[in-house]
Length: 172
Image (cartoon, rainbow, N blue to C red):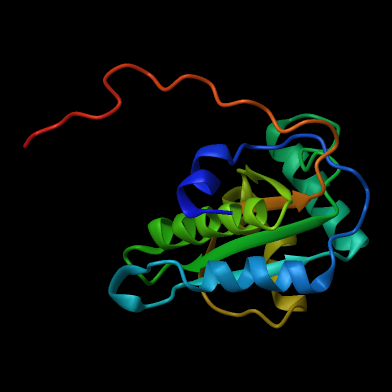
């Protein structure tokens, strides 16, 4: 898929089939994240790839609790990437955001749907979230930037909404 077409046709997907994402596609998505720009090339983010259903469901439950709701805020997606970033890097939030952006485009280019899910900050600031990181061998002072849920789209790819007037201010 041509780059600009990929950018223009990517949409946030909120309905996924339960078909697992092959590991080789998950690896490509994660690799795209590792090539995101980071401040001073500090590479502050870490990408945690989660296809283990037990951990995926645990994080979903934690995320729902932050919202004060029940249900699955991961929309049934079988693959979740949690992006965290080292708080010691002054650009860590921006770095992690760019990582997620790259991964969203990569998922779309590979024929998969994705959606950025917030509340990773609150999850990984909790005692339970810190314990999850420790259990994965992750130590340090990290902030949750976001989750990227990924899977095969259930239904049709949504159409783009019109872009707002005045989105671009030109000074030439």
